[in-house]
Image (cartoon, helix red, strand yellow):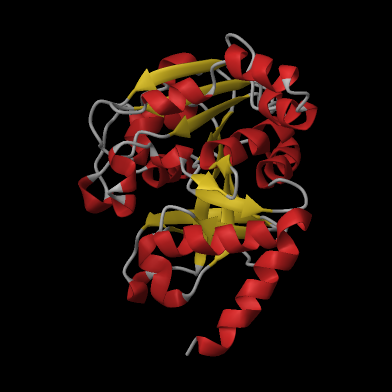
Length: 294
């Protein structure tokens, strides 16, 4: 089995309850970070890493997400007629090739592991990536691209890792590593949402994975883990128990948790300041209100 990764799964079936009432009618993944929906950042990162096949695990109420990837001939024609070539180029960059996208349904919210398992019939005997659009990572070289390059040497399974505050380890899957040095970390154990006093490290698994198809076989067992859900971390740990390699990859970049309101706002400010056309006005406004923050 080769180490080339060309397929990615995007679990997007969540209801986005933390963003109600907005998500009552708008899928969370379509919410805009500056002027691009969250899902577009994930797609762009996947493309940069060489992904050519995109699998979305959806649920009821995600029609707007599916429509987003359709062509918009009327809008494109209007932009051409008005000579707005710059906007036309931006719009065309969001287009997806026919047949590049597949949708599968997750009828019951049984956990991330279950969402990935729902795509099993579309994954062959090749490694695949999993991208969680909630985790937006600003990086000079996209996070998944960093991982794909490292994966060519390691094979097996690889998860993105970053250090978190010790008191926050109970919110993440946590790695137990042989040595906490360098970017590539040999993993000897994984635990999902451990108690703070039981955590083996403060290296948290972030929403980027490159997985062997054996993980899907482990998910066939439908074992429930933390929170009574079928955890992807547990299925990866099972591969480790069976003697297969698992590596953590400490990526270069800044991660924003856009599944939370605070993280979404932080990402909006950061990405806004990174835009030359927005930087001066936004920076001036922030400077004007900072003295009032206590």
